[in-house]
Amino acid sequence: MLIAILGVIILIVGMVLKRSPEPGSHFSGVVSIVGAVVIVIGLALSAFKVIEPGQVGVQTLFGKVQDEVLESGPHIINPFVNITTFSIQTQNYTMSAKSSEGQVEGDDAIRVLSSDGLEVTIDLSVLYKVTPSRAPYILQNIGVDYENKIVRPITRTAIRDNAVNYQAVDLYSSKREEFQYKINKTISDNFAKNGLEVQQILVRNITLPASVRESIESKIQAEQDAQKMQFVLQKERQEADRKRVEAQGIADYQKIISTGLTDKQLQYQTILAQKDIALSPNTKIIIMNGGKSSPIILSDK
Image (cartoon, rainbow, N blue to C red; front, top):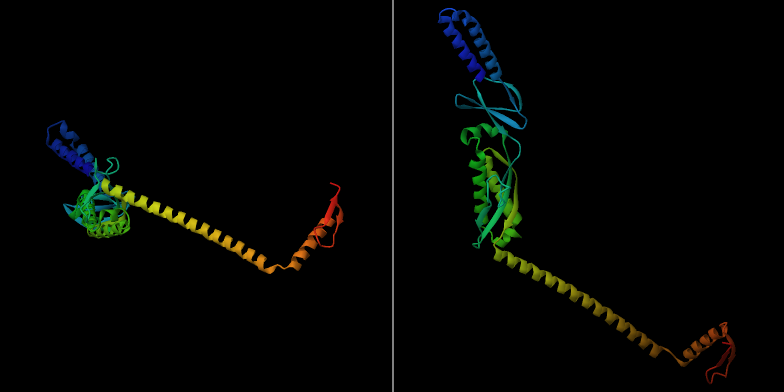
């Protein structure tokens, strides 16, 4: 559009030269033609607009926002229309205690009070994007600075409003997923009313007061010690059971031996043993004495 304005200025100069005395009036025609050409080129260039990938364009004509959304690609539009582009790609807004991680310089973590009156510090990231069809609404009612007007205040308020329903320890451990689900729903509903779409809410870190952290660590250590003692006791019980079974087996064996063997059985076992000795290659002479006493075995060893 600036080129067209420049052409108008050149055209006006040509008209002025036409009324001026010689020799300036001789150049008025050329200057006027140049001005007209520049105007045409400027209007042509202003009517041709390219929307970059990942963006949409919103048209404004003399302060009135148009409902039509220009998607990425080339467009022929009214030369007098002004185009405001919005990114429809996923955007990240981080609030962290570390100054190098968030959009705001310095400590930007969210500090909330839990139901038991303790201060909890939460680091959070919001992944969101502009809903393409709602871009005209955003421009008309919010403006291009929707990050500071909508994303930041709604997110911080949702965190504080939901955190007061939980104890500090629960936020850190057992009910963390439930807490994240609730803030996700609250933020998503409010974003949708303002033309934004939540992709994901990431609770990156929850920091408890030092006294609470020490209490949790002591509790965890006590639970680990109790589990270790249970393991030791179980192992000792198993060892006692093993010894009891072994003792019972020995007792049963001795009982069978003492009640089940007779003199004839013993004599038979003796004969078998003597037979094995006689067959041994190291035995040369066996003197039997009629079973009245042990036999005499002579060997060459």
